[in-house]
Length: 294
Picture 1 (cartoon, rainbow, N blue to C red):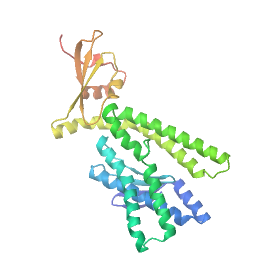
Picture 2: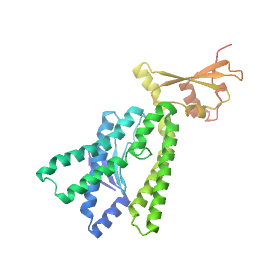
Picture 3: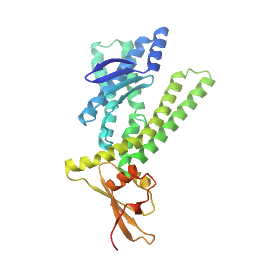
Picture 4: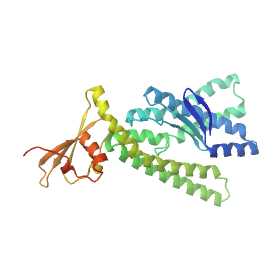
């Protein structure tokens, strides 16, 4: 449910978030919940500001029971450095809020009961988001580093798998806690949303990256030059397998070799991407390579 719009950014409340607020209100903990999600909102705003600096406009901020998420419905470029900086902005903002609160503490600006909650909440939100698993900020930072070596899609698959493992682990921990009489409902909800979020990241990674590859031709025209990444593959390797090895911010040239390891021809990223969409992911390289004539 959208509650307001700030500078073109829709602020959306997830139905489960509204339910949580109602539960907190009924139990007398609504002020605590408002402080926690106020911190979450500032955390997401930090992502938004840095994203705008990298020309990645955020269209909505959705508040969830486990935190928040900033979304872009337009074109998104998986630039590893930009993604890491955008993700890091959230936890750094939580650290800054802690320092700000500690600096203001001697002046009694924040009542002691709320001060302790404010510090603990910022520490928890900032540090927990640095865990290297998607959909957490730490997972995006780690993906940015891995993408330079493994490619965006394979890096996403790896970090998403880590997110799912984390969700299962937290769910099992919550289940064990409930069995032994501890109140672990919030941990169980957290585990559920992390598991679901990691799966969503994995499903959309290929789509996001293919959109980026389609736009790379425009990037090459605008900049005039891109660094090259060279790959070597047998002619019977499919274009789908080759795309999985593409890394961001580089233009790929593929040398096609025969069974004896001799270069039989070559192809480029543009031909690979065009074939991917026009002929299918199982198209072998030898059908689209440019023969060297040797």
